[in-house]
Amino acid sequence: MTDLQKLTENLTVLYVEDDEEVIKKMVEMFERLFKKVVIADTFAIWAIQGFDVATTLNLFEAWATSLSYTFQLYFDFSGYTDMAIGAALLFNIKLPINFNSPYKAVSIQDFWRRWHISLSSWFRDYMFAPLYIYFQNPQTHFYIIHTKKLLKVVHNYMNNNKMEN
Image (cartoon, rainbow, N blue to C red; front, side, top):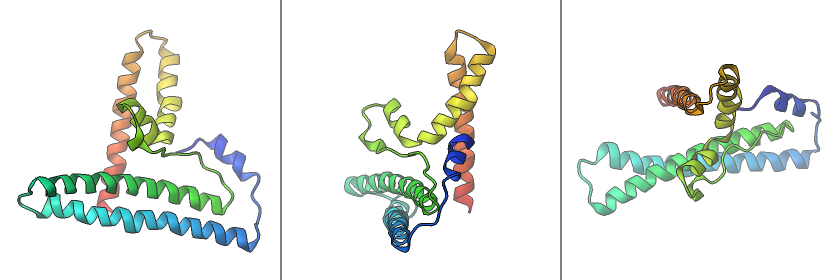
């Protein structure tokens, strides 16, 4: 997610590049696709095997399954984000960074700031700030809670639709 103003600033500088630059960007795009299709989907197979197929797991299998799911989520989201950025770069559109090594976070707040940067920014700019400015209530926790509730609804809706397709 990015706002229209940032996106349209990039659209004014579209131009055709030489063949070498296009090939370089295509190679980068396929590297990003590899992260999603090969790495994430391999971890997904192992996670599904542990969570959905196995009836019992020993300690090692439980850890392997949990870590597989963790890495599957990471590479899946990172891969999609990188692919979107790579596809945009083919048209000389620079999208903002959306994923910044969340597993290196030192707190839950830091994790969330690193995980889905553009969605958080969008909700801050277009949901939280307008509500706060409109109502001018000093109890900001009210707006934070309702903004997070809306964020959860949108996030769950997007994830459920992704799973069904």
